[in-house]
Image 1 (cartoon, rainbow, N blue to C red):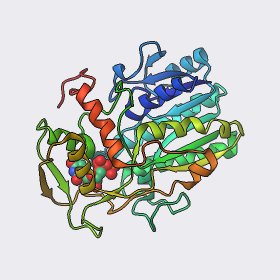
Image 2: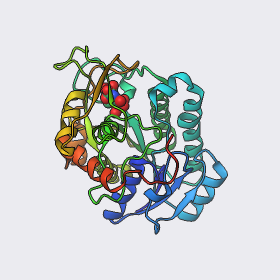
Image 3: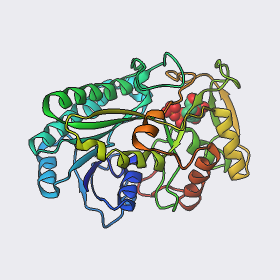
Image 4: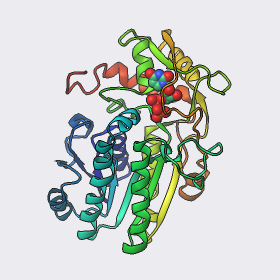
Length: 333
Ligand code: UDP
């Protein structure tokens, strides 16, 4: 299948591009390279540098490449920044996505796969999180993703768009062959920062909150391998053949892992201690977020190949060892 991958040079998008190729599909990438890396996309994959909200540019790409499916990964995803600069998030994550959807409709492309997030649930009413729980985001980032989910529902009803919105839990890890991995600037995620702290490349890890109502006092999250996430996006293709299909899936392993358990895994995998500075809670962090992903398992046959934190951290560590400066395409701030 011809698939346009918007944000295909980013962390999750680039892993999805690689999985699409492995599954025999033909990805085409659109990315503005603000956060993405040209080196994250294989040189033989058609690549367009453009803004997803640029209807003229995207229209030309759709006319030329004629994708049957559009996958959309391009978003700003710093929760804290979304609180201090909400307009940036509303314009990029919500408004630009509406432009993309309008351009698709004009070109008769009606199948869409959307990167959503467990942040749409806010502080969940119950755990593990099932798709039917109320969605009440506690920050603009989660709200912009929920806005797009709601727009998609309306487009499914009115225009026959078929879509899957995947609500990711904590994406982590790197491709098995070490070719691509996580390279954010600034990096805020726990696993890469803990690895840098372990090898002395970064400062000691600030552990945000040790007084949560959890077994060891630190936050519980559901870390899921980026290749496992990617495979779900491909497994949903058959279901998108039905016009008006409106599908929502949580993607997580279902295993709650505390920050301290992640740090222990990093120490085990790297063989080095992680220096830690116990710090106050980070604003906006719910105590526990983990998925009930049984819907993706039963409807899509989705199975994770990295069920445990050690194997996820090991893949991140392999990437770090072979690419200590990430893609090395821009100076780190
Ligand atoms: N965390 C931490 N120190 C850091 C970064 C993250 O203690 O330097 C904690 C954070 O408070 C959360 C967990 O690690 O409980 C995962 O955070 P991350 O930013 O990786 O993902 P998020 O859950 O925010 O999507």
